[in-house]
Amino acid sequence: KLLFQGHGSYRITADDRVIYVDPYAGEGYVPLADIILVTHEHNDHNRVDIVPKKETCRIIRSSDALVKGVYKSFDVDGINIAAVPAYNSNHNRKKCVGYIITVGGIKIYAAGDTSITDAMSDFPALKIDYALLPIDGIYNMDPFEASFAAGVIGANHVIPIHMKPGALFDEEMANKFTAGNRLIMKANEEIDLSN
Image (cartoon, rainbow, N blue to C red; front, side, top):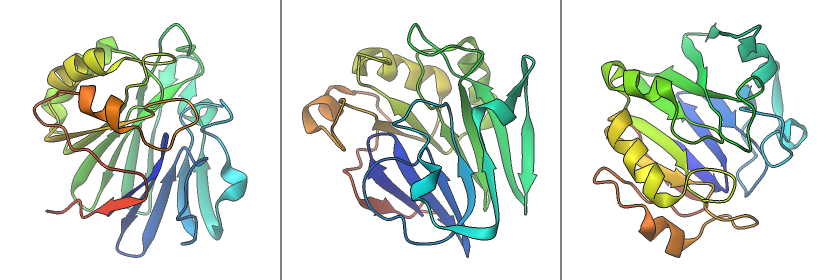
């Protein structure tokens, strides 16, 4: 399942394993984390302190995932996490990453804060099930660029996030995201990824 907590924060649960991505906003920080992923160290993405953790919790930050220009992959209890580029004029490509998370046979692209990257042209071969893209148009792509990016990535479903500074969700911005494979999720909405 995927719970969109709002802004750029979401929680993935598969069986009894729990992954938090870019914790900061919204509710739902109750199940103990097995994995916490931080795409970059801006304060609206890295609040690992608000997440309850199992003793064995693995925290992977951008500095762990991008080392001397090399994007790392991790296998944590059968969950594969591969770091990929994330960057734009507001986000240094040496300090920011996205993640492709494979869990329970589902591939999820957690883009982090980014605009279109060169690596996205290779993503169709990965057969991504769900991509989560920022669309605020201030710190990241706007909805139109993000819609184009969705076409490049070729995921089955694309969820717009990070829509407006200070907002968990913004319906007007979400509606400007026009990708044919879009899936609009409001803050605190949860979906079953296996459907």
